Amino acid sequence: MQGRAKGQSIVEMAFVAPILLILLFGIIDMGYLLFAYATVSQATRDGAEAASQLPPFPSWLEYKSNPPADANFPGYTKDDCVNTILEAVKSNAVLFTDQSNDISKFVTISYPDGDNTRNMQDRGPIEVRIDYPVQGLTPVFDLLGFDRGFTMSVVARRSLENLGVSPSSPDGKACAANPQDWQDKHPDD
Image: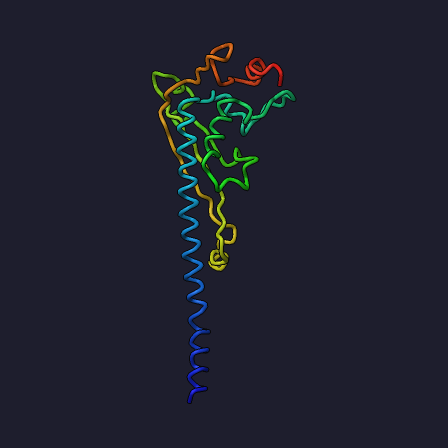
């Protein structure tokens, strides 16, 4: 009779163990997804706060998707205002360490009410959006058909507080309006 009880326990464990493992892995992945959402959300708020202080020119923002063919174009992220926003996004976001070299591909900066709202009368708003791909830590999402993970999309808006005034810049502006303006601000680069 003792041997039968052991066999029964092993069979019961064989039925229950996969369910317990799926529950355990699900709890781990849900905790990680909550952490990822909180991280991306905070990074978005940090970026929006920086954008409200140093709003880039709308013409410069267009260069992300449509860069000029000019060989002297410094790159979308070279603008001091865009770079400050991207650095604010990366500052506390430990989730972005693996992608830290090119966080700009996940971040979109825009003026949702139109480019003409970049003034102190309308005061924006300016919007920062992060679309960041997140993979699960365990194989549970693969089993559920989410083998490519999720894309966390978080948007934060702020009203403009400043137009990027910089006393150290020759023209008093921190942001470059176009590549020529950027070259004028950075003659040594």
